[in-house]
Length: 91
Image (cartoon, helix red, strand yellow):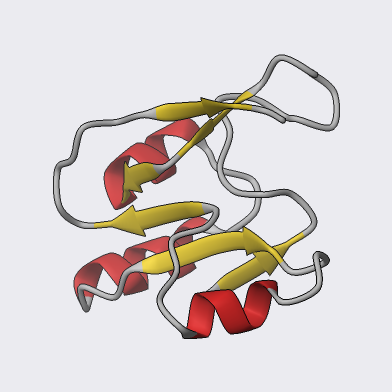
């Protein structure tokens, strides 16, 4: 888990660009290549080496930690598997 002040991984900084798109899922290599600023590349590499998925989500909304612990999909999942890269509109 990686709790942040944004809802997940975006195609660009959502604090600057209101039209930024959030990814539902992204691979470790995509996260490293995109230069995701909310988690460092050493942590991404370590998780990739040990096949540990990372849920990146906003900790601020009440109940989000419990939602993640229960397995609910919120934020962005960073995983080793190649997946269809989808994005959500920033709402």
